[in-house]
Image (tube, rainbow, N blue to C red; front, side, top):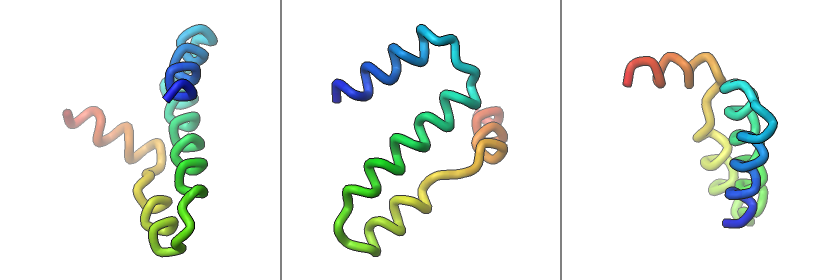
Length: 62
């Protein structure tokens, strides 16, 4: 949990663009997925992410 807080604070302080923040989140998600032992769970976890363009389109629809 502390990692998330530190990552968020670091992004704010370094003035990341939305795209950079998105990719940082994707990297974090990937690291969380890599901790899963079961291959099926790992594959499902990795499929949850979307590319940045799709993310932007979905975000604008909200």
